[in-house]
Amino acid sequence: MSDDRTILDQIIASAAADEPSEAQLERLEARLGPLFLPPGGGGASGDGGAGAAGSAATGGGAIGKWLAGAVAAATLAGGGYVAYRSGTRSEPPPRPVEERVAVTAAPVDAAPPAIDAAPVRSAPPRTAEEALAEEARILGRAQSALGRGDARRALRWIDRHARSFKSGALAEERERLAVEALLRLDRRADAEARAARFHRRYPRSVQGPRIRELLAR
Amino acid sequence: VATFEEVYRDNVRFVWRSVRRLGVAESDVEDVCQHVFEVVHRQLPGFRGESKVTTWLFGIVYRVVADFRRSAHERRRAQHEGEIEIAVEPSQEAELERGKARAILDQLLAQLDDEKRATFVLCELEGLEVKEVAEMMGCPVQTVYSRLRAARERVEAGARRLTRGRA
Image 1 (spheres, rainbow over the protein chains, first blue to last red):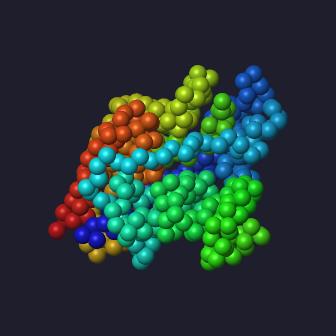
Image 2 (cartoon, chains in turn cyan, purple):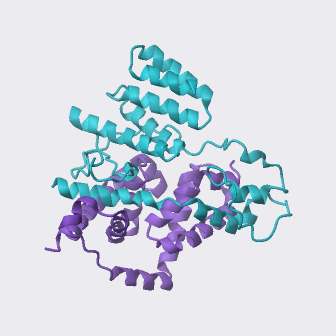
Image 3 (cartoon, rainbow over the protein chains, first blue to last red):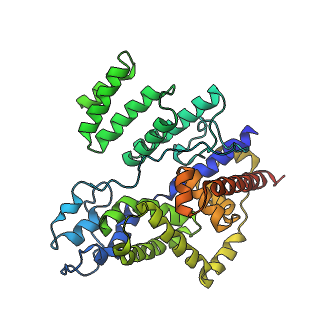
């Protein structure tokens, strides 16, 4: 049976490849080019594509080009719009889901780094072991999102862990990941506040020095 | 209220993944995404933020993809793709290549109806909470659970058949 699971894990993990490449995003942005112009702002026209030169982390490239010359790139600055996560609390499911998919963490020997697409379980874990596996799985996703440079997504997983396992066995690890993700998102003040809370709450944690190190970078 | 550019920047990857996972072939994802964002651009002035942006956006994705898949062109392509059989040798089972695994996932998802497929995609692949998926799909939480359960059963059964039935 565990073979089945490993295979299903891999099949599902392959969905991680569904992310667009930077080149694909550039093309899409170029095709949508005129739509990025503010209403009434004329000016730029043409194919907008070409220069793959210096697109910043998440596809600022073509958008920047379209905006340049039109209106100041004020909105480009900080990605200030905080997307969609409001802290919706997950309700316990009305009844346990019988079929469990892929409880265990990603197989160690079989490569895929893309834990991110591993199945999500909707039923709460029933035993301590299950809970730990679930904690590890969620944080594994956060970690792999961070590894891909997707700190925003990592934070979503971190929040999810915090909601389901506020004081879980891996809460300290979660907080370290949170500090790291916040720093990557340039939210230094939030990272420092979170670190301060961490040090108060877990003064002797092995994660303490690591968090200090992150903040010192 | 968010500008078009903000909506695009914050959600383009989510839209791209969703379009792909709802059943659009890789080669068509870019076209369909373009169409999604054209619709978004048209409808954004009317969006008052009654729901989350992603909820609103996913509604558009879902409809655009459904339209696309209904088109004759896509039907032909889908039939064609349905003919492709993917064999998994027992010796390879432990390490499915990524590309092959993704093709199998396409096949497994293709056996689900649109609603179950969307539920599976949002819960299992996107990692969203059931409650949030219920909002996106405009249905009770309970319905999401039952669709999810049914979808998982089909996917698991399909995976077992594909990886084993070759004997």
